[in-house]
Amino acid sequence: MSGRVLVGVKRVIDYAVKIRVKPDNTGVVTDGVKHSMNPFCEIAVEEAVKLKEKKLIKEVVAVSCGPQQAQETIRTALAMGADRGIHVEVAGKDYETLGPLQVSKILAALAKKEDAQLIILGKQAIDDDCNQTGQMTAALLDWPQGTFASEVSLEGDKVKVVREIDGGLETIKINTPAVVTADLRLNTPRYATLPNIMKAKKKKIANVKPADLGVDLTSRLEVLRVDEPPQRQAGMKGSTELSRRDS
Image 1 (cartoon, rainbow, N blue to C red):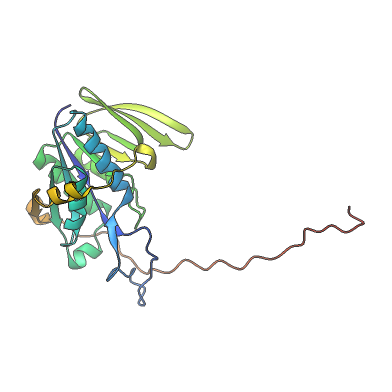
Image 2: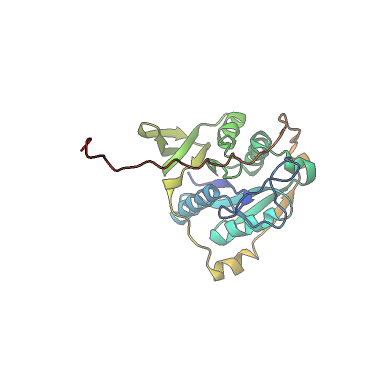
């Protein structure tokens, strides 16, 4: 296979930030909070770039859905080695209700438009932990899928995927075009060097709207309430000493 790869990159609250629930319980506080690329998306970008470095693919396109700040996440992917970016502008109420189904519709539409041969996504995002986007995208496109990948190799027009499953590892071989989702042990993402960060500023990011792709962002889900997890109760102290009678 020597074609184009789409990589999804999601902007999430940084993993090191302590999450705070809004006073009205409608969600979590995002204003003034550090955001970064979803760690599993970083793994997906790294894998796509490695495939390009091996000359197995021609182009890596980073895609992110969200407000203007999502371009920062795309720039990070470009600094890691992606060739160009696509920013799907979603803001306001639509962004608040944006879920895996809506993102899957966007990715499926872009895959057709860009004539992509492979879509690589993180297996899940650390903010909602849905683990649904890759599977839904494959279903919408009617493409085979290799989820929870710990090893990926291209063999002609097929993709060999070693999957992490409950019982150990499963190896499958699927035809392209296909969707692959990256697990934690697939690779170790590289750090973006200063020269590459400067180069990324010159790479192109196309701006599109969901309507341009014919995608309806209407959500079928309603969040009723968001609460902090219950605090752990204090443990009870027990004595480890044995009485003379018991010893």
